[in-house]
Image 1: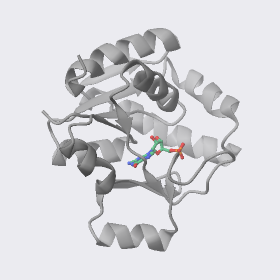
Image 2: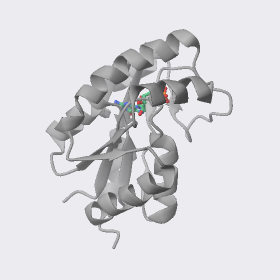
Image 3: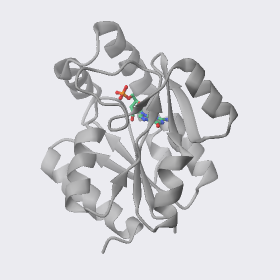
Image 4: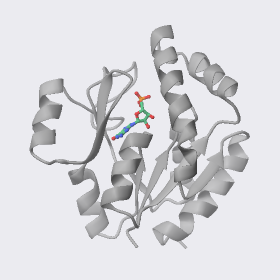
Length: 186
Ligand code: 5GP
C-alpha cells in the first residue's frame, strides 16, 4: 500500500490544525505543499504554506502534467504537484495531502490504495462560526466556502473514514489511530 494519506473535508473544519497535531504525533509524516492561484494570506510563505502561482504558471503546469490532481475552489485553483509526492514516496516517506473533495476524488481514481479521511464539522452552524471566527476570509468568501461545504458534506459517505472534529483532542486521537496503520508508522 502507498504510504500516503488524503485528509479532506470542508474549508474551516480544522484540517490544518488537525494535520499539525497529527504530524507531531507521527513525526515520520510529511505534508505535501500544494500549489494555488489564490493570494497569500498575511503570514503565509511561498514554498511553506503553498506554492503561490499565477494563473498562467498554474495552467502551464496543468498542461505539462505536473499535477496529481487539481481543482477549482471558491474562485481559485489548487493542486498537488507530482514533485511533492514522488521523491518522498520513492524514499518510503509517508505523505499527507490536505485537499478538497474534488481533488480527493481524483486521487481515489489514480491511487485507489491511498487512505482517504474526511474531516466533518459537528454541524454546519459550527463550521460557519469557525470560518467567520478565524477571520481569514471576507464575508463573500465565507458564503462561497459555506455553499461548497454543503456539497462537500453531502459527499462524506464516499470516504473510507470520517472523523468528526468536535473536541480537538478527541479528533486528533482518532485521526492518529486511523492514519497510523496506513502510513506504516507503527
Ligand atoms: P485555503 O484557501 O483555505 O487555503 O484552501 C481552500 C481549500 O482548498 C481547502 O479545503 C484546502 O484543503 C483545499 N486545498 C488545499 N490545497 C489543495 C490541493 O492541492 N488540491 C486540492 N484539490 N485542494 C486543495
